[in-house]
Length: 249
Image 1 (cartoon, helix red, strand yellow):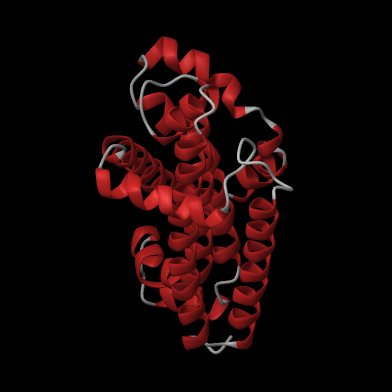
Image 2 (cartoon, one colour):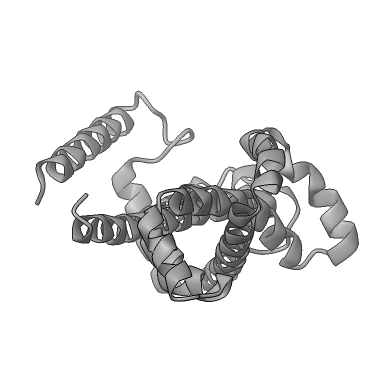
């Protein structure tokens, strides 16, 4: 294990041990938060019983759809905008301030247009994730060596062939970074939207448990979301480091 990974584990372990001690000593009451060991126990019970399987599957499906859409649209728009300099110069200030826009303000409109199904949650996740993918695509394309572009012109490759064979593979590490951010933003968007107005999903179940003071459900589901998002991001981070290592960075 790398030294940084060891330090990371030690820090997380120390924080969890301190939190466990505070909960067990009564400094943090069970009404406020159960001990981490009890949260893990309750999460195991929930997963084994299958009582939340439908909610877990629904949220993961919505997150996956938001990620796939944001990655596809972000890459396509990134390639198109990168080739059109005037359009990029016009849009870049908007991209820089995009996250100042309260995306959840569109949720009532989405409900009116699409109802109370999964579509409004997926759209919120997509809106948050797509710009991160787009910006990282642009950053990756900016770093493609000019010699490769001249080679593409020498072989008379069209725009699509150039993107497929040269620019996108060269920008792959930045694309993976964009996917990492897209996964995080998609989780935030979908689960947050389920909090606001939904009839199912992990966000709905957490909100329902919160309103009913059911810590044995609320905290385990929060832990589950943290584990899922962290696990996916760690896997993508490993992939990203592998790509960078192969390129000598």
